[in-house]
Image (cartoon, rainbow, N blue to C red):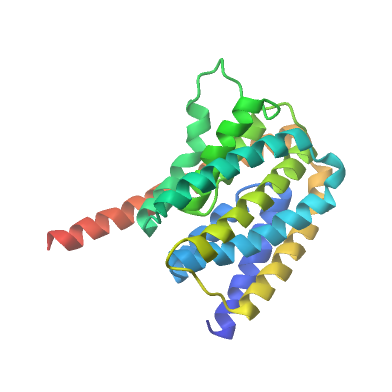
Length: 253
């Protein structure tokens, strides 16, 4: 990549890390969509994993007093199950499918029956969501939208949501790094300069968001987080559909 493109991606990573630091979500979803535009899918997944491990790891450290460890430990069980299953198939979707999955995932939890309320402390729900979210992570690069809806449906405060989800996401992105960086046949390489910029930018954006999150109320947090997820998801559904239609048109000729 050219220095100008690396600098532009660095600024984007600061912005998306700020967004994730503020709401605990959405930033990674935006970033992977941009990376898929400029890079092959495996390389985009590796860079995204490194960026998000830095962003979420620093966010978990900043809010470490608010981490709920029971949901984290149960979620890790689901991650291990998903990695085992996906290692057998080594499936890597193409970009239109990945983008459509990115858009659809936020609405999956919302379609659950109303009498089954998301409960991050539930062992069976945590394992189920952990398995599904990790599977989505290995197909689309992010599982945040579905995980966001899961945590927002519980009784956790905004600080607990941000801290606990960040800890879960460190494990998810590390698993994704192992999968795309070592398990699948088309192992991806990464420019070390770009990786260093990604880590620094992610930590900066996360730090900048902390004071604003402190000033928000839990109701403001939930309202704006829900609107943000819906907006970004809708964009990816439209973009993925357009790519599929463009491909179909090309094949028709």
